[in-house]
Length: 482
Image 1 (cartoon, rainbow, N blue to C red):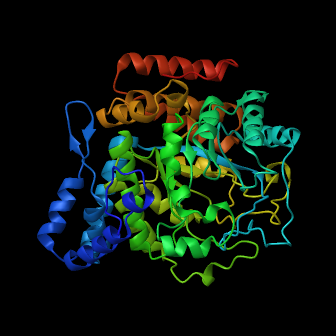
Image 2: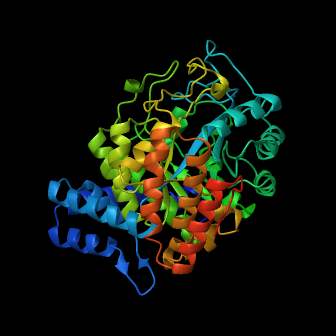
């Protein structure tokens, strides 16, 4: 039997089934232990320091106890602390991005994904480099600066060379005042050498969803194709970091397996990265199974309701306080609104999950990977965020200034990241307002910018940010950053 070891590089040892089961037994046995609950909550709270805040985070076992507790008063405390942590490290900024689907060719048999090999009635499509360029221009015309590229796993149709060519094309497109300044990559597990090539191509974060940490379920859900190899898939982040990618993003697809098991596995994976590489995940995503072509989410009997979903999100925020948290347009406006308060720091906007969808006037559905619940335009999402007190940020400065991996985390933990992020968010928001926003959004936006400038604590930084914003308004100068 495999022994649990967070420092091991073997999947069955750092995501250890017996350790997860023992954790769930412990959580169930102690979920109503008031003294223990209070002790865990106190540990999770951000501590004010002379410079910034400090958070200790929670172990997978401590976090699982909170998740198992069903006292509404405790849940409310969890929510309050999650909000405190979010504001301490990310403030009221919300980073904006969009997914870009390059190809839906795939050789895997994943039973929850419409791109699975046996789905013969979905049209298969792969973007040419000219089509990639057209998609990028459409995204730039919306105002996007940050993309997450997606592609099915197919060594013939989507080899690493194709992905690298697409990244090069994306970065090469300069349309009017538009630029894509950061390309995150969500593609199948690959080799150290290929991760090295992705790093050299200038990617931001490498994202790979585990889908499920339950190995038996994983093998059933991925019956055919290279993704069937649980160990190779689960160990991908270690290979990515060995290849020089220091920003990696985790996630499970909630609804495939029992959520408490998945939650414990997810936190254990974050602990493993911290133990081995000295830095945890740059981001954690929280997708849920959604309807799509040939996929009925009710076929999976582990679905979770909105309240449970919110509690999972808040508990992740307490356990892994410094990580960015992502929610996509899989979720409705109402769900996204609630989760923004509980720890989410990145959202997609104006998303289309079909291959070539951004150049189409009408939203295409025939090649969608999943149904989009929030179908508002980017302009509507930006205005909605501002009207709810959030600063929409198109900032990519940390990545481009080399503040990644442990350097980003050390700045985040010390609170110094606030001296960069707040003014950078306001400057990139001003770019959006000037170049892309509707009159109403522009009006709301500049009122927010004016008020938020006053909150920059350092006078010199405040003066420079204000001058840069004036230059953005009065000239074609762009891309200021701290």
